[in-house]
Each structure stands twice: as structure tokens, then as C-alpha cells.
Image (tube, rainbow, N blue to C red; front, top):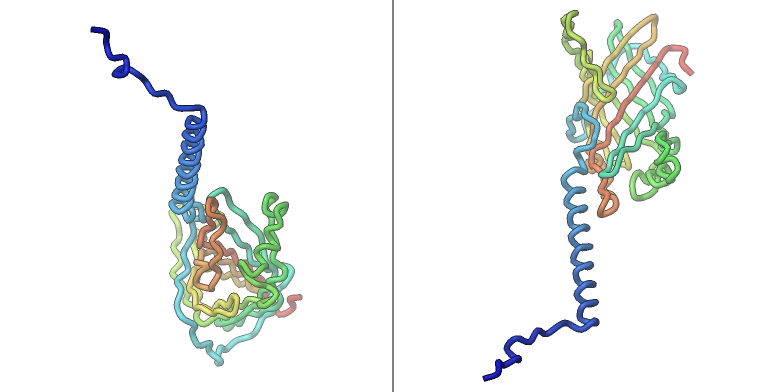
Length: 255
């Protein structure tokens, strides 16, 4: 008996069905790629932040009105705040100038002080950020809303002298662009950004010479503590961590 050819028949998809199958496969692949990029962003968004001391954050503290000593004016040309922001695809950096400030000294020791940051002076120093107009974006409502909050402020609420550890002369001291190797003080103060005030504590170096004082601090903060919540693009999330580097110089004759 002749075989039943129907049992061996192979049904081939039509050209239209083949094209639909290809399109569905492409859409599935695109979805997988987006999911992978998003997962990578979530996993590494904070990993790129500079390795530095994390400032301790607390609620606003009362500022002593009896801080004794001589006020020294901050040199606005020699003082600034540097910032570093990171995201999945890279890192940006820049600086912000000060508007005014003073440090209070007594018997060669820092006892208080405050300074105002001019948010309109915010600038981007890396080429990519500069070319992409990052400064303008940072000053928009997505970030610092500079039109409504043109200044930020820091006011010292406490100063603690640290025991300076003298390193072994045979050892090479650690040098970091984002972390102090041997801080001399621990400083606490109220940091106000976008109308939100939090008290932060961080290490710093304070050097006094010939009636003037220089101070440097390097630390990280979480921008969400000050209501800065813009996440970035879905496949290029922005780290919540902002690195701040503060350099102050003050004297009785500062500009």
C-alpha cells in the first residue's frame, strides 16, 4: 500500500509569518538589552563615586552665639568648593565660588565660622560636561533650582581637634585626590542647600600661619538628604553621592 504522504508533510511558515517572527524576536532582544542596561545602572550607579570619607548627617543643630575669637575674612579668590558627580557612563567635575565668609580663631584654634556659596557661579570643568551644557542643567529645577535658591550656606556648629598620627618615615603615606590622609580636626556644621538644612560632620585639616588660616575638607554626601532627587536617564542613572572638596583661606586682610 502506498504510504500516506500526509503523515510526512511539513508545513512551512508563510513569508508574512516569518517576518512577524523576526520582528517579535527583535522586540524581545531589545527588551532584554534595556533590562540588562537598567540592571547594570542600578548595580553600578553608586560604585563610581569617589572613594572618600562619608559625612555623618543629622538634623539641624543650634549655632553658638558666644563663639569667642577674632573673625578672619575668607579670601574669595583663593577659596572655592569643588564637586564631583558620577553616573553609570562616566564622571563630571566642577567648582562653585564663594560669595562671602569668615572663620573665627582664638589662641590659634578654629572656634567657628560660616560661608555663603554662590550657586550661580556653578561651573563644569570636564570637557564633556562643558560641551553638553551640564552647568545649566545642574542649575535647573531638576537639581539645585538656582533661580529660587541662588545661595547655599555652611555654618560651623562644632570643632574637635584630632590626635594627629605621625606616620612611620619608612612608610609611604597614602595620597588620595578625594580623601585626606591625616586630618587635624573634625568639623560639624549646618549645610543648607535648596532651603533644606542638615548638620554634617566630616574630617578636615586646619593650618594656621602668620595670622592667616587655611582649611581643607574632602567628603561625600547623599544629595537626596537635601531633596535633590533627579534620577537621570533610565539607562544612565546618576549616583546619589556627591563628592565635595572645600578649600578655604582666611586672614584679617582678605579680599
